[in-house]
Each structure stands twice: as structure tokens, then as C-alpha cells.
Image (cartoon, rainbow, N blue to C red; front, side):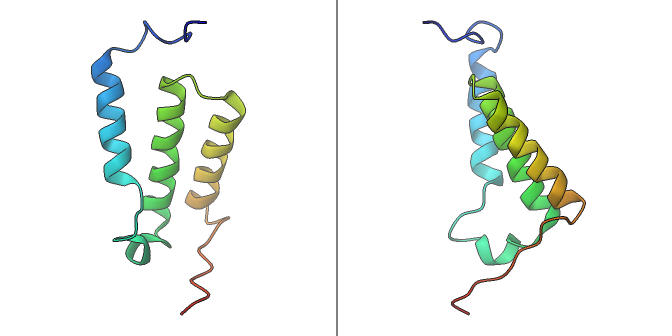
Length: 85
């Protein structure tokens, strides 16, 4: 079965989306710096949703990512901190 979006997104879009996702995503090096930053956390979730959308992800998962991003923006979600600190 061919992916439904195979022909609507140019290859460059896939590459740029992946690059942006890699730049925005929190990792071991910046987790403590940005874990509670609502803009950074919501952006990470939004680019994840965009990536899923472009790569034929599950609609429910895309919606969940966007809803979580909105919760971060509205401060409905906050970082609870690290239990090991």
C-alpha cells in the first residue's frame, strides 16, 4: 500500500521537517535547561505533530500531540522536575 501523502510533500519538506525536529527536540544536553520552558516544549510537540502529518502518522496521535502543545502554551502542563535532584 502506498502512503497517501507520498506525492503531496516534496522530498525537501521531509528533510527540512526532520532537521527542524532534530534542532527543536529536547535531548540529554539541553533537557534541564528547557524542560520547563512552555514555548520550547510546545514547539517540540508541534513539530512532532507536523512530522507525523507529513509522514502519514496516525490522526489521533497527531491530535494528542497538538492538544499537549496547547496545554503547555496555556500552562495546563508544567514540568514536575527531576526526582533524582
